[in-house]
Image (tube, rainbow over the protein chains, first blue to last red):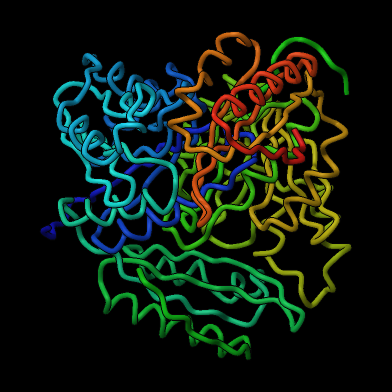
Amino acid sequence: MSSSDKPVTACLIIIGNEILSGRTVDANLSYIASRLGEIGIRMAEARVVPDDEAEIVAAVNACRARHTYVFTTGGIGPTHDDITAQSIAKAFGRRLERNREAERRLLAYYPPERVNEARMSMADMPEGVELIDNPISVAPGFRIENVYVLPGVPKIMQAMLDGLLPKLEGGTRVLSRAITVLAAEGDVAQAGLGDLQARFPMLEIGSYPFWRPEGPGTTVVLRGADQAQIDAAADGLYELAARLGAETRESPTSG
Amino acid sequence: MSSSDKPVTACLIIIGNEILSGRTVDANLSYIASRLGEIGIRMAEARVVPDDEAEIVAAVNACRARHTYVFTTGGIGPTHDDITAQSIAKAFGRRLERNREAERRLLAYYPPERVNEARMSMADMPEGVELIDNPISVAPGFRIENVYVLPGVPKIMQAMLDGLLPKLEGGTRVLSRAITVLAAEGDVAQAGLGDLQARFPMLEIGSYPFWRPEGPGTTVVLRGADQAQIDAAADGLYELAARLGAETRESPTSG
């Protein structure tokens, strides 16, 4: 993977009625965003869509035109509600076919008495895809152009993404520091957090309030490509906290 | 709130760089979807967008044309990165103004020494909005046409939504049963889960695999407006499980 100055962005399309019904809390966006961030790919958008072909096609086509990478999670199992592969085929105007290598892997994995048409349908993919290895339950995901199709079960998705990351071309890695000021967000704002952002326009300065029994606090996250700028902004933030007479503490961050 | 046969849908727009960076896991989609489901409003779409005016405007305008209700979370605090109100004003082509009632509430709540311009900026809203009460930290949200603007902090958002729910017009309530079959999803599929869906086209039958040390399982969720159809499909699912020789258990669900 190489570094360059052009922004490399990603979009995640989360496919699944169970997320939209509120029954299941998505656990994949945070994981994928963090891992991509480590190699300089910025998650710039995410969408949650139902198990509906037209909705999936529309989301995939909108997002693949806008972003360097699109990832999808969910809908690639053996049941009738798993319609991601056929929807992706439709989005690209390609035929859905039984992928011979995926079929071979499934036949090698399942004992003969467990081979059935429902399971083998997990080998149905758009023509011309590249498989994404599944080190846990074998059924592969696939890549078609800039779209990476992954399962929704977090443990399996994570293992597949981990194998995929070295093949992705990252951009400039985003660095960050997170500093907590033990003062209310309205006071941190008034003490000049916006001025600090104006002094460092190349940084993204985010402010996240919280309340604890001992009082309010504000975590300020400084993000950008240049460590020296981040450190200079951090110094400015510590001065701001001193003006407020507020305690501070710095958290370790991972980008 | 009344019941009718037309589908009532909602979209949630989650505004915040901290969700897209992976730093924070969204906790609001699941809560809002569940509460809306209880009154027959179906969450049909969700989007996560960055703290970027053009992105927020585009998402709000796309979603408010498609759905009965649009909710936004995040970006209504006192700091420079809180740009939701100005973005919503732009989406509707309305002026941003100091809302007099919101200003009054903030001035009544904060002691004089804590009143400052950053805090008072939380009263800046598009002209002509209806306030959404905030029983926890006073700073109100607002409604503009079918768009409901809420904060991102879950505890505050939840209290505000709870106050809002009786004012929303719901649709036909979605009922559900969730039945777990202690068999692998590929076997449940092959035993006829798709045929069951074909027999009950008015229901939405979802299938969610899991793995436990004692073996694989599949939770099947039957959702729809008609309890008799759900019960008939559940009987069919119990027959399917019996053909597999698989144990079953039923979970309580809340729609």
